[in-house]
Figure (cartoon, helix red, strand yellow):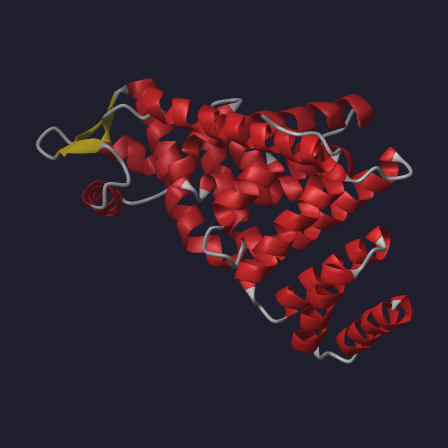
Length: 313
């Protein structure tokens, strides 16, 4: 009966509070399969999500994260503020999953660039732009999304300036500042100057510390590409100075990047110059990213229609 179902919920909650997360997750799952109380079922899903994170079951946690997203999107909350708060909580909790799951860096781009969640971040959690920026810079396969991330960061800076007349939150974050310097102001020296501060942030950030080396390599590579867009053929010694490296070190770094297919360039040792191939995303890369975005929006519309009881042809 209903009393037994309620007892199951209370027992699962008790196990969670005792730190028995495996038992709690199991009983919260069972509760959700039989519960008729939508509000408590929603709370049970949050509890199971938290338990999976605490057990570091990242696959299960990712599935619960997507379920929570769907439920939050489909639920008619008493007010828009409450729905905004739920999305804000989910965005924060999602960091545990995104920076531990094998596909997390793709998933964070998909979620945080979703129009609803991007609005949530810009309204209620501006500091999360750091994680969106870092994920974009460390994901070479999704580099076509960097302009969207840059636009989000630049918009936040503009909003902050309009609101206070001072350069605050976003400008104070070195990773966001790096993006703006490189892609908005196209100031390579300023971008290079922010890298030390970026490294300090990465070293002290719980979620980003694992990206420290990759971020350093990719940021140098993006500076390198930007430099080549301007100069086409560049002097190796001049470029080494821009990156704050010795000539020999810069030459080794470029050769390693070329060998590992991380950059499309060639080094002319006799002339002491570097020539970059097309640094821009190919037309096919752009088409693929746009199709992915359309597919995600189509799925969201279909889910919303299903949640309201309509049939989808």
